[in-house]
Image (cartoon, rainbow, N blue to C red; front, side, top):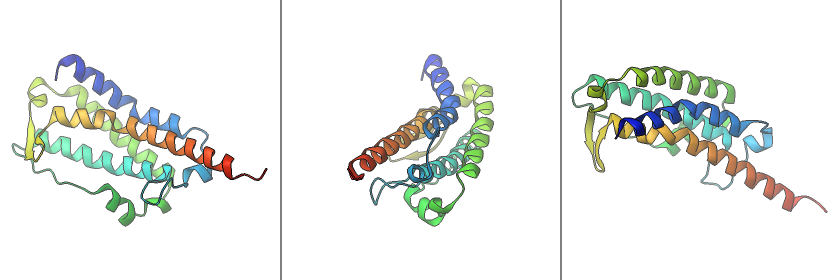
Length: 166
């Protein structure tokens, strides 16, 4: 990863929370809890996923930086959504957690050295999990889910307009 690519991804990472806030702007309670399909998430569930995955990502990055061969555990986002009752929990609390962890990790990203950017954790089936790979994945993660929230809202409005009495 070049220094320019890294700087762009760090900037995108830092802008992720604001992008989710924009995606949620003006959301109605019905839009927030509308499920596009049985196996898909509501906007509320997406936000809780962001909060939980942000914590996991923060720990992953710190373990890579601190341990020579960090063992990074996998997680099942769908299982977390069910077990941790995403559909029933506060949006505000999840957003506060997402923001706080992201802000703290952004400070760390700004202080990482070239040696830090060369570190890697345990090998995975798709290759070694490095700090650069971490940034490639999490740099765009919030933006991808902001797009998912927008798509949910668009589909909700489309569905609501076609089912409204004429």
